[in-house]
Length: 400
Image (tube, rainbow, N blue to C red; front, side, top):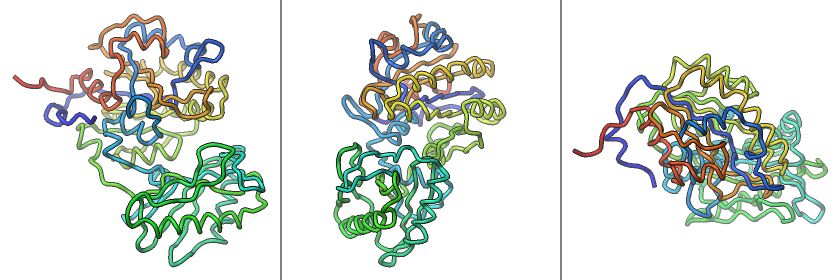
């Protein structure tokens, strides 16, 4: 649940908070070890010996979260109250301006066999350049259907954004993405009253997309999810009195940060670039959100070794963050993405907090199993902001 008492307790000071989100950090054992346990992480292990650790749960026991809900929870927004479709986040992340009547969807270029069965949900992770070519082709062939304007926008690799502009478009539409190989594209269905016409339009559009992409192996279809309109929600600054900067290489996460009113800090494509951006902007903000994407991507690919390598790379930059001397530093995941499952999962995320005001758990390493023994225990991710604010001495006493 969202912590509603914070608004009366928050106070300003000069403290600085750094939240490092290693996307999909948590895993499951392969040959006895998770990716985090197999990784060589001397710096995170050292911090686990002097900081407070635990496990955070994005939505609830057994519930597998999407990236949007998982991040909202970490930022202290109840993901059940604030339902934000990934389509909106993807569109905002690539700079599209959405009106309240627009409908946006997140798309995967995918591979479909002759029987209409999806055999690769990511079309072999085609290049971003090929993505741009295909979006251009679709835009030339499909622009206006039933007085609704259709826009195809490339994102990265296999990801694209779909934007619909027209009258009477409704949200509350189910995904067409089956979320697994071996199944056919799903029919979009209405999830609420008044959405039938829009669901039928999505299905008609999908058939037209398939006609245009026929023969464009491996990207001969698009799977849609997060079909949504832009919501209204309180800004991060309103909630926490924090000037915040977001550092993310992937559009969806920039989109989420923008929706919350964070400043999107320009950065390059590598982890090194992101830490450089943090260093260059450290004096300008109270709160920094840094997002690491590839750990999740390799988990979804089932690539255990590559996910390990990303975790190890992140670890090498921890001393550089420490040099900046943030008052509070947190390293965690938004959700787990075990290579064993090749997907997001319901398992809680390892959580590490460092401040001069925290307990020292003296754990042997930073891992899922070690964090089970941490002083923070297992807690809802919506409490993470309260923990950060408290350790930054930004919360007054509650009650007399």
